[in-house]
Length: 367
Image 1 (cartoon, rainbow, N blue to C red):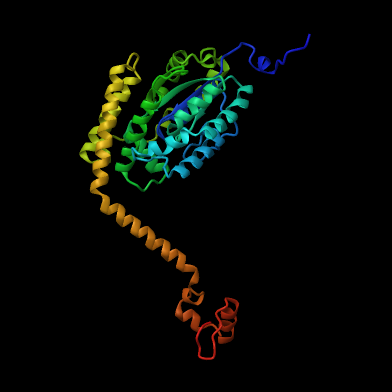
Image 2 (cartoon, rainbow, N blue to C red):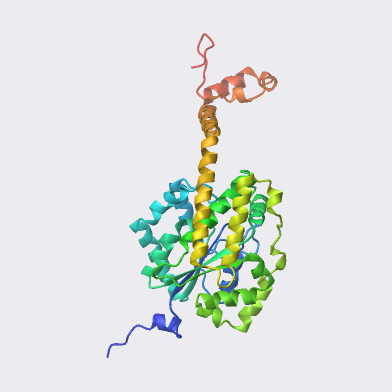
């Protein structure tokens, strides 16, 4: 009798079903902390990972390939990571519907299941392409499940300004947070083939990560989390640091326009309800649909009023581009102060002009 291949069975002796946990949410909202916890409890972050830096010294727990492919697609779509435009979702949606993109992601996912049947994929850019990742996971025979991190919007804005040196202002960052979270809520609603979703408060994760993560594991039926080992729990205790919440502020500190302030506050209030048991209901979905409509109206009004600013910015960009294009044509001498040029011997100046192809003719005119 022919022996059957056993490679996958040996890697997965308990027959755990394939799952991919997608950790979504705005950047600086605790997505790295959650991904770091579940990976230390045994779930697999596909390698190589993005290396730590000063903004996140404990690591990002996000695959480098995922970040790179998202950057590629965002650049193609002309969409920023923190884009406040409601229409940006249509731009990235065109990529999500492409068959080659879906195949590319499925083929990347497939070999990582040989490492572990339960993967975790996290990236602040992820929400822009959730539909694509859902389809790709299902094609590999895996069940997609979703965890969205919730952190007060004022803290997210403050953290981005502190660690990313963001110059676009609090109003833009708050609007992009509203845009991101309202779409993420819509994109993670139950669909055929899904295994559920949860919303996790960053504060709950830092205060009692055991209780919060255990609830997540049971809600999403993640066997790795449900059957974690004591040594893994000790490792997470060493990883979690309550001082990770290094930025604390309120919406009042941001000085937002009134309507944006109110809409941001309402969105945060409704998201908080989703993190409570029994809060994810059809009625809440209807409320989020209304909030999205209100945000689109607000953004369209602001865009219509500020059209002159957009035109001005475009003209400034053209002027700068022209200046940069003309800069190389300036001679080296033009960039040296006059008193310094005067001290240079004539023979040296002639040699420099010759080397630059700017010799003078008999009338003293540069060729």
